[in-house]
Amino acid sequence: MLTRSRSLLTVLIIIAVIALIWLGHTFLEGEKPDIQITPPLKTIGKTTRTSITVTDRKSGLRSVTVVLKDGAKEHELRSLTFPAKGHIEEKISLEIKPRELGFKDGKAVLEITATDFSIRNNSRTVSLDVTIDTIPPRIYPLWSANYINVGGAGVTRYRLSEDNIRTGVEVNGTRYRGYRTIIDNQPAYVCYFACPILSGREQLKIGIVAEDEGGNRSFVPLSYIIKSKEFRKSVISIDQKFLDQIISEFQERFDAIANVDPVRAFMYINETLRADTDKIISSICRNSSSKKLWEGTFLRMKNGAPMALFGDSRTYVFSGRAIGTSDHLGIDLASTENAAVEAANSGIIAYADYLGIYGNAVIVDHGLGLFSLYGHLSSIQVQKGQSVSKGEIIGRTGMTGFAGGDHLHYSILVEPTFVNPTEWWDPHWIEDNVTGSVTPS
Ligand SMILES: [Zn+2]
Image (cartoon, rainbow, N blue to C red):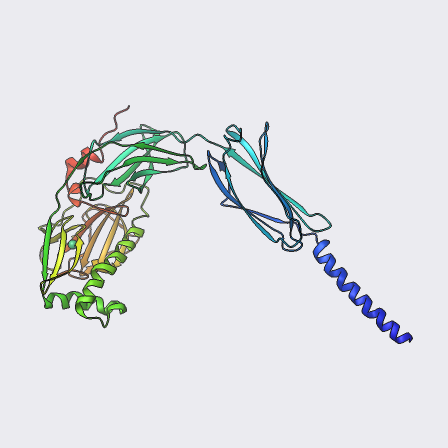
């Protein structure tokens, strides 16, 4: 009897201990809830969205409150209570409009408090010092040319009322970055941008944008006289020899077309590979030096006869059938075979390798978003990251990539957009549109 009641007691004690551990674990635990704010919030603008994640892994959340307050005012942005234990995580999305809530611009505190279901009532309060700033940055345009060529580039200079902001020029929704500079001993911004090749009926909306830390945004339209340009249309007949020559190089490099018939391989190269190449170029040309590295007019290859122009609209015909189209976004210059290719202006080598349809290619970063590209090279004589000066030999012409014969494909880009290189060969255009003096306004 005695041993039986003893063993029963032991079992009861074990059960009691387990129950206590469980109770202690869930109700007596001393771990405070965790509070995370993403992205980190420093400034609250006219309308600011933020996301707060509150977690309590042990007993779960009991309540969460979010309060915005300054010396004069307090406003509860969110108050949540959870009826039962076990609510581990809560994601709170907030849209804060401080002016509508009666707050004035200035310093404030965003206070988030969370408690859990532990008997110990663990509670954590995060008090975040924020600045309420509902005034959008002011933009003061200083200088812009009064016309822009379709397919060409433009430059504008301006000042802003605030610092540390995202700014640039927007052209039909494409954003070009503005860079800090000094004009008349005062901070200012310069931005290079591009006018797309327009069909003629499209509207062109160009303007300076500035967005501060609070997300307040300003837009000042820039008015330009748009000089339209007729681009050439051409039909390129492809024979079997040319087709085989073009595709053989790519079939060796790209498995997707290794065993595909020549016409389908050509279509893949002209469409998929061309688009992939453009994407790579876009990402390279989004990272430019914040300093102007170029000076004066850009060099044009010596004795280079123009074979194809910027904006040429091409249709490729094989056996009487159109098998593709493309827009030629550079100028083809042909000289002797393996002719020396010079850097058109000073800069830093942003790319020096095989580059899809352009074969062996070099991209030079001239700073402030301006780049030059040299394609179809037979050899490359520079390395990525290296500085080059105007006229320095960077490689030799060839026919690598999508090329029918030995020539240089020469392009100029403003960030991701190909622009007409002829503008940059013209000292008058550069003077009128890029380096023109700033007259105080
Ligand atoms: Zn070309």
